[in-house]
Amino acid sequence: MRVTFPRVVRAEWTKFVALRSTWILFALVAVATVGLSYAIADNAETPTSSSAYLGVDVVSLLLGVVGIVMVTGEYGSGLVRATFTAVPARLPLLWAKAVVLAGFALPVMAAVVLLAALTFRLVRGPMPGMMGHAAGAAVAPVLLALLGLGIGALVRHTAAAITGFILVILVAPTLLGAALPDDWGDRMVKYTPVSAAQALYTESDSSMLHTGPAAWVLAGWVAVALAAGATTVLRRDP
Amino acid sequence: MIEVADLVKKYGSTTAVDGLSFTVKPGRVTGFLGPNGAGKSTTMRMVVGLDRPTAGRALVNGRPFREHRAPLGVAGVLLEARSVHRGRSARTHLLGLARTHGLPDGRVGEVLEQAGIASVARRRAGAFSLGMGQRLGIAAALLGDPAVVILDEPVNGLDPDGVLWVRTLIRELAADGRTVLVSSHLMSEMAVTADHLVIVGGGRLLADTTVDDLIARVELGEVTVRTPDAERLGRRLVALGARVTSPAEGLLTVTGVRAEEIGATAAGENLVLHELTPRRASLEQAYMELTKEVAA
Image (tube, rainbow over all chains, first blue to last red; front, side, top):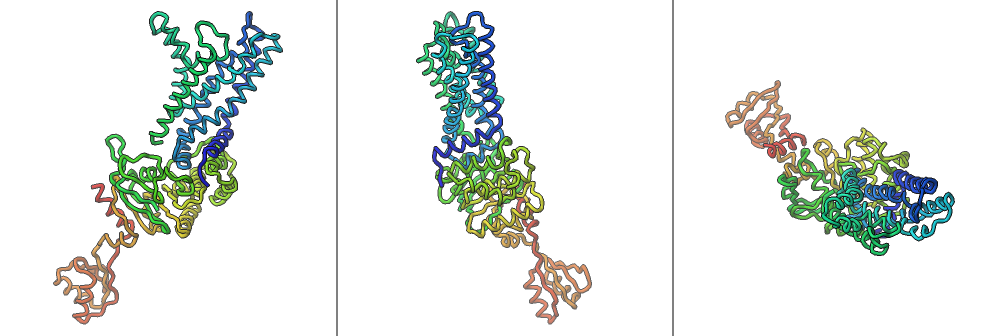
């Protein structure tokens, strides 16, 4: 009997799948992504190779919330005190949550994205280049969920963390574009998490990073958020 | 064994725990007593590594709690504040803790049974009454069969059945040779369960003592004497400087001289005594006396 990392992962998995909210949020994700793909296939005048994945923009927010409440739900309910006495080193808990979140969300997103692509194809017919974006469309929301996990650990309060996440995801890019002089705004915007995420599953143009650099930029944001979250988890009294 | 040495916890300008030192030994129940806000919960949280001390240290079985490799087997904790996610069942809550240590799932069933909540194990913890929540917290504390058990106000919210169960459990845990630290703000609760008392007030140690010693410390200085020659003895004692009242025929209440002197005086005068009793303070009085000094 002792604490090992695989055991902490197993425990976190048990906790994650036992929550009704997990299943509700992922069901919403599936319905929204596939539903939007169907609607766009049915109605769009000039669809592109990434039209089938437009819903991913929306569900990325939901997945971010899943990541956030994985941590803030523990602080809010007081469960964190029990969890920390079982694993007083604390950091293995955060890493285990990241493993569980990615391990659960990635296969689900892969299935959802494939279903969205299939739906699009059935309604609209084959679309060149569409399958090339599938991997990015599945991975991008998972990385944003991990970003949410980091922000949740940093902020520790559900409402504040969701507000912060939405500021980072939605408001920051717009503000940057407007607030910086000349074309500096445009040049910076492509490095924001949401723009980097979108670059993973859309046809690249001059306003976006290429897929490779975008993946690194987004992974960098995730690393920064998780590192910041880890610092608070370790330093602050729950 | 819990060793607390020069422990200090400050929140901004307020000091919750102010240089506390004491040791909790195995094989007996140590009551951790003090008025609300005395720093009991904060101290307990520091012992299990939840709060970082501003200064000093707390060791559990010879090491800081965070350094143990199987923390649930070292110390089981029930904290005063609820530590359960309302959306999970009692069973999943315990599984989520047990699996971090590779404890078999059967162990969860055992503690649920022991805490008397096996029948509601699959209900969402959010629907639990205060008493059921308290039982779940105690079940979680027992999960790793810990050598040290720390319970913060364990009888809070329990019905009389539950209170009796906790008292018996606490005594059994100590009889097993475990280290048991139980906090309460009620002396009456401690009087029936604790062998040893650590009393705090305003974040400081007021007493680290046994129940008997604490009572003896508060000297009421009143002696009850029963004698057929109450009048004669009374006069002799007044001559010695005592204050004597006679609440009833043949009964004297004496202050100002000790029981030994009264006995010697009576013997010297060849007076018969039927009773000679130094009045003892109740535990409650002793506790009030002790905490009053801090409040002042």
